[in-house]
Length: 136
Image (cartoon, rainbow, N blue to C red; front, side, top):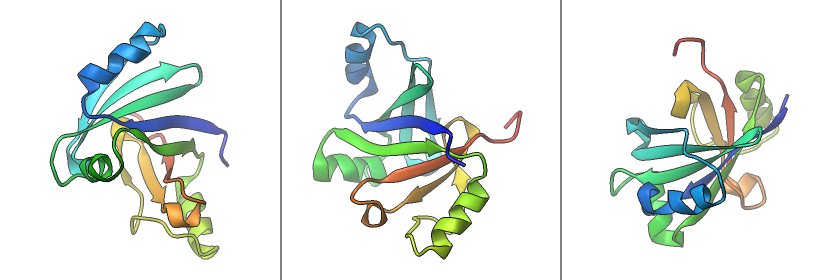
């Protein structure tokens, strides 16, 4: 089940430079986390029941660095919360949708994540996310 939009990921050249706009709107960066396996630093900006993720590359060969090189700063993905990532992943695969990973992996905040290729979603990279186990 998909209960909500969890967050919108925005690729930025620099979190330090980009956060000022959101702070001017009265929003605040709640935390900044590095996800080494993805080569990204993530700033979480809560906004109501959803979040904005500012995504800054930490290596030149990371997916965010490649995105910025090809497209420049902007919306990178939309993340949908799911209550059962395993079942959602299996259902999408069975229906012929193209997912990017062989199985869900850990993402920011210890969540389990899977990505659905834009070719399967009408041009939007969609992330599916389920909170990790307590204490992870």
